[in-house]
Image 1 (cartoon, rainbow, N blue to C red):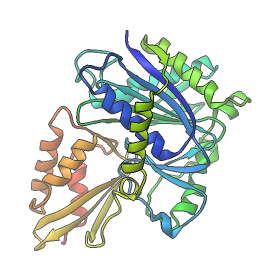
Image 2 (image 1 turned 90 degrees about the horizontal axis):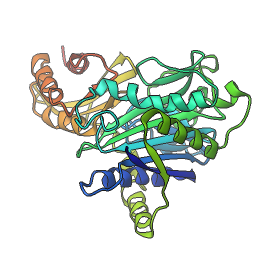
Image 3 (image 1 turned 135 degrees about the vertical axis):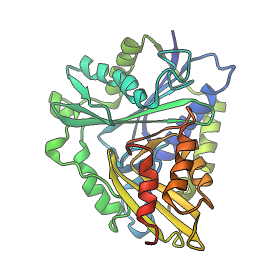
Image 4 (image 1 turned 90 degrees about the vertical axis):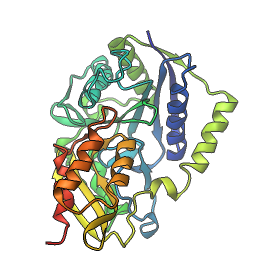
Length: 356
């Protein structure tokens, strides 16, 4: 039986939250680690727009206001967060950890299907029947109540993330985008009130974050047969988290990492399963890809995207060569990209922006 460190934190700053996830990823990835992983339930203060790992970030300086920008460690859609929403982060030694000792026992497309079941069991404990259709949304009565995503880091450690609509719902997205991104840098599917819901709406009562956390704990323990033990960070752990929050997540380097330089003057996008898949690139002598950035709503392990962007440098700017590079990257069983359809979508999208 796995033993998970169970942590509940309120009113976090996004940089502290990211640093806590990073700390768990590093700790669980150590071979001498005695415990099996971590389960963290938390919320943010104030209105927050949560970007996936691969979104191009809007320039916050151009639209100062009360809405905070947050970039998750995992990919996926841009969604509301902050007041009225609860975050869940489950960290495990590898992507199949609760089901097999073989890290590759679960194919990447199976990961969310398996780990969302802890959240679904939590809903059941609250009296709700939820449904997961196989992409990234969790629904109740055909209305979106949660979003799931995941990252697998370079050492193979899994971070499964969820955002649960507790007292507010995801139809807030257009309002947040208008405030933070008036120029429309982030391409996002709009969610309307009729298609979204919350725990408060469905159950006609208000849950505190602590009450949601207790449901999540019980749901995960029952579904996965794990034991969740309350964990209080040591002074050394708190120091490590604060250092990561300051030096890794506390400035524009993390949030603005996918702001695209103006010289990447070729841009194309494709509508895909989770929203939009984008590419920005420049050419060398009109024959080779010089630099390239991928962006959008897809879910992928970050090492794969870094490798793909690196190996496409100086690749001949034609479909067959681009597709060969993409297939080589994603033939590695550690690598995955979800939400875009077949791997050929990568070459198809780049070629949309090539000179005729």
